[in-house]
Image (cartoon, rainbow, N blue to C red; front, side, top):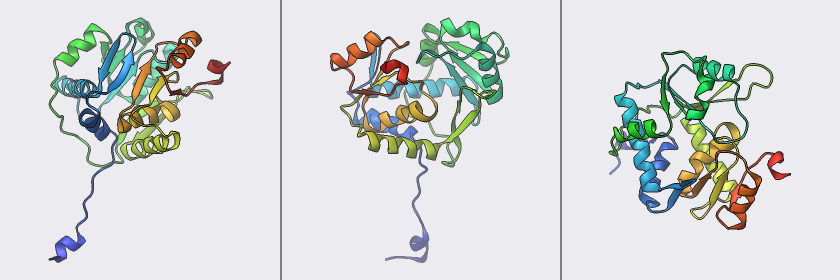
Length: 242
């Protein structure tokens, strides 16, 4: 029987790539999610660490609408210190995660931004969190999921605001275009932000494939990973290919 109410009701779920991490923790639980040097995690472990980080940040005072910054090695180019201070201040970040060897570049960052060093301090924060599912704060898929900054070629860096729906659809388009699947192994040589890298961070969770992280671009290491069959694809600037 179709009532007037049921005939006009529409089921709707907000599009967000965050759901892919939750799904990957179930569907691809024992498959390798990320390899970073001698450290690796499967998708179940990766999901657990994501939940721990989210719950620990909330317990530390993070509220809906707050911004969290991240400064760590992923590719060769470095931001200048004054640009980093500008980005942190411009984005309104409350927390910043930083690789210890890059911390001197935060000299001009306001002191009220809480710093969390990657390594033991980061792991201690994770240990304080819970692996139980974290209730989402998302109310609308057009809410901002991240602010990624350009290099500022023609002036100050520009913050590019991505919403959940846009990140979801861009990532799905990339997965379909490059035919990524659970057996793919993507090697990171470009930054995990903006146009290229940003879609991979989410799309790989959608299909349960593997990330291979290297801190700096070493041609011998890059091509060695391909020669040994450990990497199946990557995206790179022309200088890496020369």
